[in-house]
Image (cartoon, rainbow, N blue to C red; front, side):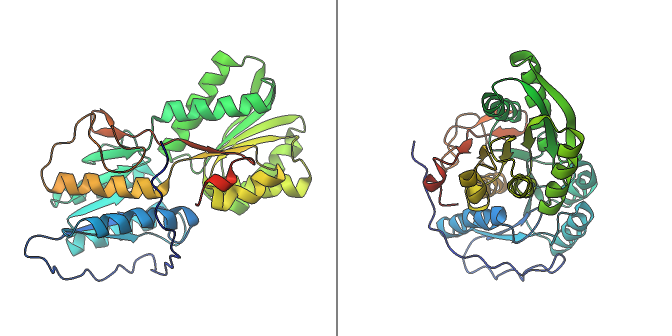
Length: 333
């Protein structure tokens, strides 16, 4: 099925971490729900794309007002402060992509006790939420990343894995599933370092890879969890002239990874459409606010979420994308 692309717009986000937008007056006869989307870090290419999903929801429904907030750097404590402000404002719902599930749990509980609907993303298993929306099953995604890496490594040799933060639940689940799959399917591969923390930061990813290759000069591959980490690893491989010698597979959209894919510094990137996630999160929030029942098989109205599956309060889509040097032109984001 072809992707239902949104028109790409230039998004300029200059909101400070604790400066929230003034909520618009309700211009409809009925209720207009105020839905805040709390992301890990404002201004990144990933969340600029996600904003387009919010824009589409706002265009399609006249009873919802979605807006994006977040810290200027990925920081769980800053997310807590912003969420406290949102609770004080009395928004109707909050969608959140937590830097740290554990850190956000208490304030999510506080929000729900105040009557606010809370929807999480990249946080399967989070307790104090009404629903968690995932683009796909995390274990399958991790295994898919490993299949790509194993093929590039001829199913043998040393490899390492990274996570944005050790508190990033989805990142950890991807890498744990990847390693488990490797042990079962690719016994001639060897994990030498597990879950290097690259802090969702390109410079840290760059520096950690350089340290890694000095310690393990025979390293044949690396799986990278965060977009910024993938960008940093790609840059390090380019700088060190290891293109094609170390296979690198990471989660990253093409607008950020394209040059590294074309140079051979990155073997492939896997990802989901952030706009689709933004749309799905806010559609679920709207349905929950309207008292509509969420159940298996319903269509949330965006490619990859046409027939959701559910496990308890976790909603799964099927939006897994993969880009290589040969397919970068297929993606407008």
